[in-house]
Amino acid sequence: LDRDFFESMIRTPLHVPIHWIYNVLMEIRGGHSPNSYSYRVYEDMTLQFIVFMGTCVFVFFLLWVLTNVCKVCKRCCLFPWEMKWWGRLVISFDNLTYWVWFWTSFFWIGFNIYLAVSPAQFHFNNVGMMSFMVVATFLNYALIVTNSMRFSIMESVDANEIAFLSMDNIWRANQLFFMVGPIQGFSVFTGTRNFLYYLMYGQDIGGWAGGDLTQVSIMIVKYWTSMIIVASCVCWIYLFASHPTADEYQSRRPGCIIFSFIAMDVLHPCVYLWTLGNNLSNEEAAKMHFSAKICSTRWWKKFWSDTLLNECITNIFRYVAPVYNFMLPILVFYNSYFGVSAGFTLVAVGAGH
View 1 (cartoon, rainbow, N blue to C red):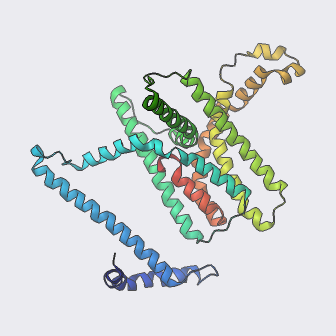
View 2 (view 1 turned 135 degrees about the vertical axis):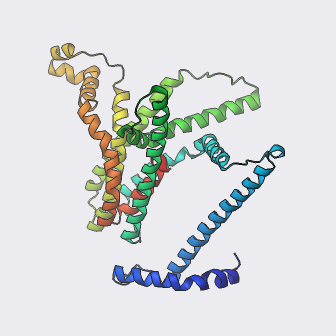
View 3 (view 1 turned 60 degrees about the vertical axis):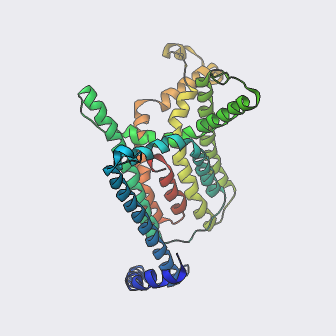
């Protein structure tokens, strides 16, 4: 927008209500803090947000008008003439381009590791960040619930059963985000390489020639989830071994806590993949001596499988992810260093990403 147009048509009429809201918030907060900016900065941010939302509403309105105009001449027009078509096109576009964002899981894991090992400084209002996280949590679970209920209703119609939402839907949504990144990255790399082979050498790429794809995927997920769990333990060890100051400890501890929650999400599938195919029976394990158990890979697989993959521990892990997502806004109010990592992790993980 032109600067003069912005000042005369947007800032001037909205200055009075924005200034009034600003004063009310300052009274609630108890005045300015050493980290507060001038009123002009907050007014500019508010006006920019209003312009952005107004632009989105205006573009959507134009799209709605154009769609209804095309409905009149739909016989000779290939343009969508119903709004539900746009929804289907958006879903199709997301399905075709989701692989472009495979790197986001790597970024968020790396970002949390960085916050766990390096002190950081952030300046924001706790109440504002907590409000943002509450909204992000609500939208995240609203997407998960509606998506799960949609498929549950479709299945219930086919099977004549009652639709329900289980905690597995929420738990698997958290696991999926951090587990599929390496597989998607491997698929992008392999597909690009095969296409270049076809383009430059004319090599046939009609079939998979790299071995058993299932075993490759299992190995990728197995070592990736193991790295996350080991890195979480190393972050805690480094936190205490580096003898941080009180301020550094307050800054780095939230990163370790959030990264530990991520590790707990992937612990269950990691143990399952490492113990997959173990056939040691209880009778054979009971006959083994202590020294034989310590040196036996089969016994260790059975031990961790029985310890972590039983029904009780599985139910605990199933409820951990929803609980800590609801607890994060409260932790932000208690400690502001939870804000950036926890807030944007809520946006990135699950249906919210």
